[in-house]
Length: 400
Image 1 (cartoon, rainbow, N blue to C red):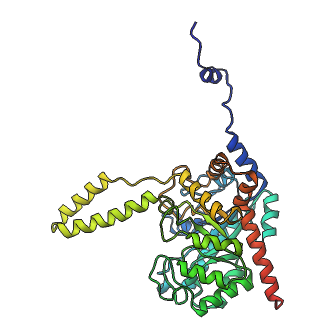
Image 2 (spheres, helix red, strand yellow; image 1 turned 90 degrees about the horizontal axis):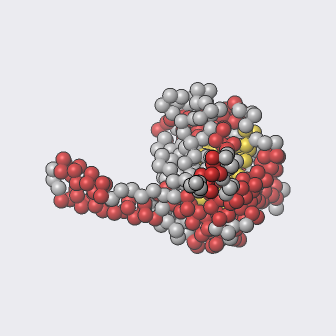
Image 3 (cartoon, rainbow, N blue to C red; image 1 turned 30 degrees about the vertical axis):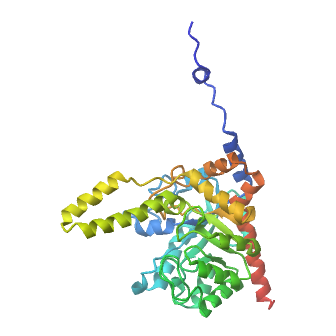
């Protein structure tokens, strides 16, 4: 008689395969500590949805939504709190930044208030812990780009009053008062007004977000701030040499500042192979344009280059490499998670939507991370930074 292999025999008699011990550990950690994601662009996805444009009621997140985020998948991914990005582009000036910003805040607020069984406002660190204990997802807002304040500290105060608990100093456009990473530098960092913005954020208890800004702006902000900073969705430049990532010189300074880099899942920030291919593509296309006068021939040559040089995929393992690097250089107290779901089109292999956070934590557990450090990554580091920002604000309001 031929004997069935053990795995086949087990399946035949209905025995479950052994559980992944690292995934079990990940779920245990994420059940005890709120997983706080620093950046999700669901409000922008709703604004631009082809079917439910700006219509929160029509964009149903109680079931499988068209994008990366909905309530069932947030639950499956063990998300405990979310900073909802209220992003507006830096080129919306003709429409009025303030008008569009208030529209985005309104969309985010309607999402939160429409689903009280799933979401609850959590505007302080204590709120986040309380809401998590109630089995709901704590919700805060993040203004992405200081262009939205239109050089007005009163606008900054208004956004704080509406639920914004961080502001990214720039997006991709250099402002009158701060240099962006993705644009030309005009100020060598922050201007005096930019320093005033940081001071006002300290006074409010609003986290200073340094994703998207130039290294000089990062450095100036660290010189001025009395509270911890965050990077709501950035990765490590030493691992992937992209302008949106954080240099080691800044990572080292986070030890004193108390800040947190919330590692993102944007493929071009995660994979050095993707950066290298992008550079090679630009050079190849420039050469083709210079060599070939005929437009059809240029199209053919570029198509052939694309076919011969397929775009590599970023992977979950590479995201873990960034987290490991920040853990090593800045320390375990200075790293978090900022996925950027619904703000990206291409996805990291293994991190395709908000269900996948436990898989990332399992990978880190597999690499030897302790449960205590996993808990710090999940949310304890961000909670500590927010608590410290609240304490600084209280001291400053009392004249300290």
